[in-house]
Image (cartoon, rainbow, N blue to C red; front, side, top):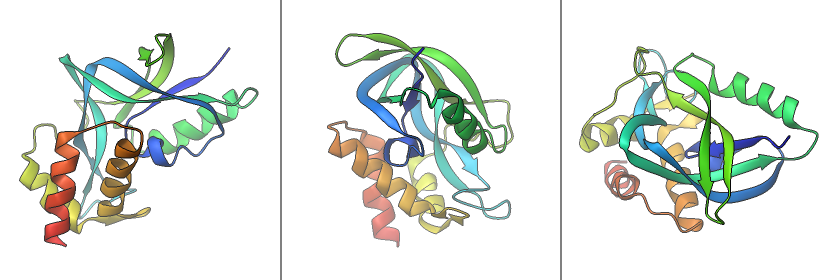
Length: 175
């Protein structure tokens, strides 16, 4: 059975697994936002950064990429993703229906924020997000790199995210 993964942040530009198929997809009921404090990859416990997460918002939908793992790599892919995405238990792993741009509906592994987790910080004003992102650095590098790569990749596949565009412009003016 095919393993689909829904990417909306760093999985767009750094999936870390062999992708056999990549299709624009929409996940209803969630919004992409910088609502998770990053204490490992893009910040530290003393100076957290921010990373994108899917925040449950029933009236929203997130458009990203549905990535199908190469046949025969499903088990290794899910093990890799769990090690990467569940590092601090701030994400919950779910299987949710994603509608692909070509009309197919697939069940995809999706990592959504646990709103009860201490790293959850939904609702931060964009200016506060920009200030944090402009200065945070973690084990995988500067928070700015994460923002710029994600926004650039969304644009390259024809997807728009007004908040990310605003954040990119504001963060560039700060650094």
